[in-house]
Amino acid sequence: MTDPSREYHKPVRRPAELFDRLFAAEDPAEVSRVAHSTAAALLARVRADPDAGTVERLVSYTGEHGIDDIAELWSRSPARSLPGALWRLYLLQLMIHDDPHTAALLYARGRAELSSADEVIAGAPSPAGPDELVALIDMIMRGLFDGDFAVALDRAAAFCRVQATGATHLADDYEPTEPERASTLTTRALRLATYAEDLTSCAALWRRDSLT
Image 1: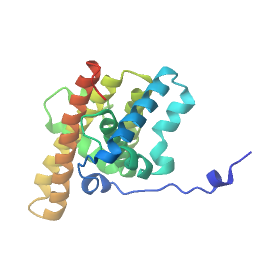
Image 2: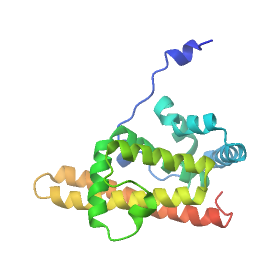
Image 3: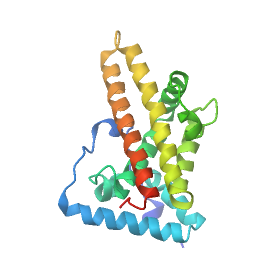
Image 4: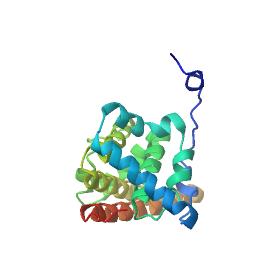
């Protein structure tokens, strides 16, 4: 039987600019315990029995429900914590799903400019268009729940570094003629670079059984 509340549910959509302007780094003591306990319980339960349907629902959660519930749980957690890592992955996924064409543009430019193994680690095909990047971020999200968690974090961090490099170089291109657009890209580049550092640290903590 169909649940009427589900049938007429309208997903909450947020623009990609959410990534650039909301959820400053706070850590209110009153939500810390809830954030850590829910993240640990969710991950432990799914990884102990990675049912394909459950994993798929978690991967597609923000597309169906928006980001608000996850934000309420995890957005104020320390960056280098389990809830902080999950929050960053969901927000990164939302950014790419909301504007895959910009994500593809940043990725292509970053791949051309960055001399490192990050594009290999991230695992995007070449060339990587909008559809390929959406598929990639969803694959990385699945890896959180039914694969090697640290590898998924490392792949996400590499992805962020490629995107950050692309945003930085595009910002330089736009600076003489469109300074406002350049400023937006610079903000995104900084956020992406910071996320890359945080996710890399989270991967290292996970490998030491110290990510809580």
